Amino acid sequence: MRSFLKSKVFNLVLIILLGLLFSCDQENSVRYFESLPHWNQIKVEDDHNFIPIAATFGLNGRVSPLITEVPFDRQKKSLNKLPPFIEYGGVKNLSGYIKILNKRFGDNKLLLDTGDIFSHKLPKAHRNKIEQFYDYQDYDVINFTETEILHYQKNDFKDSTLKNTTYLGSNIFEIKENKFLEREGIKPYFIKKINNIKVGVLGITEFSSTNSEIRKKIKGVYFQDPILAFMKNRNSLNRKGVDVIILMNHLKTMCKGKSHKVIRMGSDWENNQLKCPKNDPLKKFIDRLPPKSVHAIISTGPQHTSGFIGKIPILGGFPRGGNIGLMGLFIDKKNKEIIPSKTILFPLIKTCTLQFIGTWDCYIEKENHSIVNRREEFFQKTNYQMVSAKFLGHDVSAQTTKEALEAN
Image 1 (cartoon, rainbow, N blue to C red):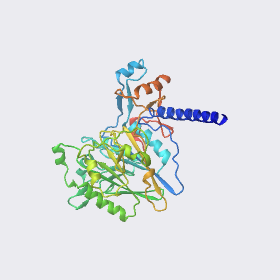
Image 2 (cartoon, rainbow, N blue to C red):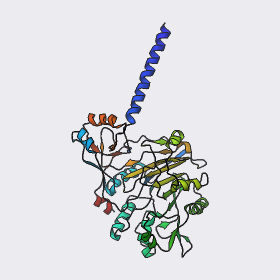
Image 3 (tube, one colour):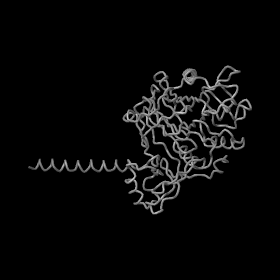
Image 4 (cartoon, rainbow, N blue to C red):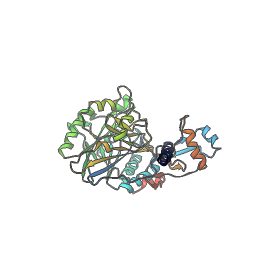
């Protein structure tokens, strides 16, 4: 009888514990959308190295913030306690997030941008200020795309104002010199040593404009086949003893991810495959790659593009400083090889000025998602209060747009 009662009590306790765990999981499943407010130090084994990779996805010449309008029905439901719009992006908000990245990881990281940082008709003075912003934020590389080429070809690609940041054009071939374009501040590949690991970065691009007049303006260079250029420059990296290869691309992909949460390759990669349209340029490119020729890909597009294609982790997001992507790679110290099962993709971070204290994000649903009512409970409990955004355990302190552009 006594053992029977013990068994019943044990089963009851187990049910309660499972219920609490399920409740916590349910609670967290409707919070932290497009945000990473807290930072639980990642455990790195003594025989492993950790390489954080952070990426943004082009400013398109846009330095002022973006806004998300709060749907009228949500405002009405909140009795007008919700603001009419939520601000994010632009250089002033982006700078606050990058400052925290630099504080958290120092120089032991890669900070990349997928290119298209200018617009086609940007005045030179404004262009110089945008470059100054990237330089001051300690970016490692920017993908050299169509818009950058249009701005720099007038002076034989020699008037870059970048001092600390490198333009990367791995498939931009100079016709006259019969080689990949290379100038001061413009290279076909980039190498950085992080925690005693040599990381190589390549960047490929294609025409983003369908305007034939704009295409005619590009003279003296052409975009070599991305796979051919990738293989040539990858071989150069291998000869220089690179351990890890990261590829940035600007290929007009429409592949779409689905997760707003942390994705771990060891357990989640099969359930987080990107959904790509037929003949998508990124998917076609990856299908042509030799096996194990690249360890991670940084992309850009009009949709949330973080997830996997096969077993290759893809980090992708939206332009105009609206998002930061973050990925972590683990390397075996002895053989200096990637440990794929430990690769981690963090949620795409929306660079908001403020976040709801009830959910620690600034996500406002525009459709009748299943999570809306559950999130509404958190909003109501905290009276729809918004406070300074948090990122990686720190408060985001945004500069003004002028400060971000003129910092030195």
